Image (cartoon, rainbow, N blue to C red; front, side):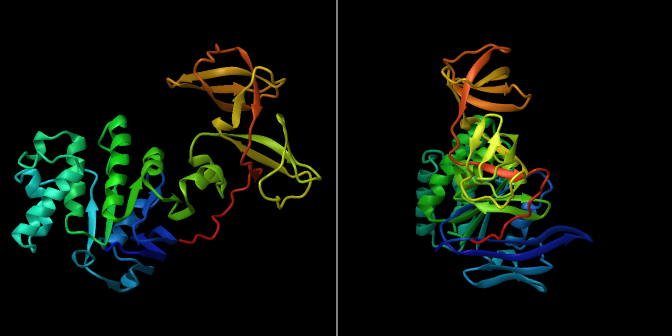
Length: 358
């Protein structure tokens, strides 16, 4: 059965250097969670604390209410029923694909072991490759075998440490979607660590954006993109640029491109200087609009162009435009804003993370 993970107020340090500072989040049974952040933010250390590879200085790590780690208490990794998929696959070169998958099933009777291996080979799309050796497979196939090996004993929880980083971009995207489907079919609770936003968005139900040993925001991919709680999360997730604005007496915010009402009533007084986040999909191409912007750069993406535009007052924004609108650098185009979610932060403020609940 999939387990619930509770990672509560955990602190950790290497020597005297703090790495995790009061990190808390929960993962419900069958949910796929992701820790997303830049190198050195502490996300892999979280994974190692969950697995039992690192002791913790404070807080608790619990599976279905049973404490796995606390200060002075560490249940050995082999007793946690946690599977791990590593960045380098870590397959046994002397074992066949079937042998690798069966490795963790030594306590299972032969008939059940064979059936489980056959089931997983079919699930990962390698049903006819059981007698091949890892070195005879592609990188994507090897990663699927590593996943199947970790899933074979039906762990309570599966941990994936940058599992797609050794693959090319196209393979990473395709495999991340396949892995999500496999985990959902197995009803496996999982925690993924990555620095790649596309991977996180493809695979995760909940994402924690990490920074300097803390979680800035723990939320759904949709809310992280459209409703970031901190300026760091807003800047880190997706693409976007900030435009300066001013809060008016009626609570609206004035930008160079017009006046707009925030989703929630702002806490700022009239005259407060703010920065408003604009995503590329907030800025629409509109030949009939009186608002004009100059094309500074353009990136062709097949079906779309990502234009970098310069406004009259010097501000810059992105706009995602269908590729049949083929505009030259230096050309002026009409634009309008369609802000379903207005996200603003007080100028130069670095908001602390809000309370995080699982």
